[in-house]
Length: 309
Image (cartoon, rainbow, N blue to C red; front, top):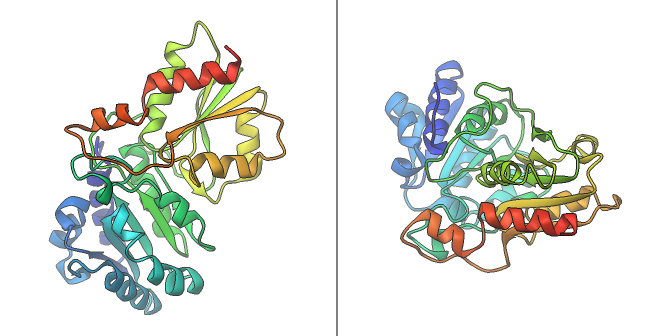
């Protein structure tokens, strides 16, 4: 089944996995109608736990369920699932390497109407700083389906970041998700654009618009941690400069993670992301993205700068 919304893809995939594995359980923090945990609740009410507006407690309960052999998925807005429950995630789940899956829904600026308090622009930095934590940021709904399947198979803590809004798929439906491995979506010889989440689609649009000017390779980096160093270096091989693009702060996010791996590579780099500020409310997703420079035009500008134009 094809989806155009990551949350819907997530909820339906949880139901599919739940029908195959009775150890999968789902916990929500009063946001099941938004995270789409409600889909699992409707299918398996005995394995769904409504924890109320209490992410810290939800996370502790999930840790206990994991220790009893269950595979718990916790759901809330990204700013709450990781931020409000950080102490419980760190002290219990990450240190204990517990098999808990954390969903950060409505991530980045995608909850455009609620402003800075609900827009998580730092969650990838927080989660990837935790030892033992795997961090995923799928490009679209198609990739979300396969990423959720992969995280369910993974034995250990995992965080997945999902967008709130509908937008077109840019990845192949049904393609197996390999944790840690970036994928080249468009071949190019001069500049490598490494993008994650919603920004992958904009990177592809930028490469198409630049095709008669600069040869741009587009790489989908859907695993923020761990990054396979050999695979990443192979993905950018031959390109003389790189651009990273993310709907996240440029502090500690994709750009930082990429440069940590490529620190010994003699390639200049440009970063497209949120410049160390919080979000703000807007009348539309497109307006808030434009305000923060998360646009096709900004990617084009960064590519040209990286190319020396």
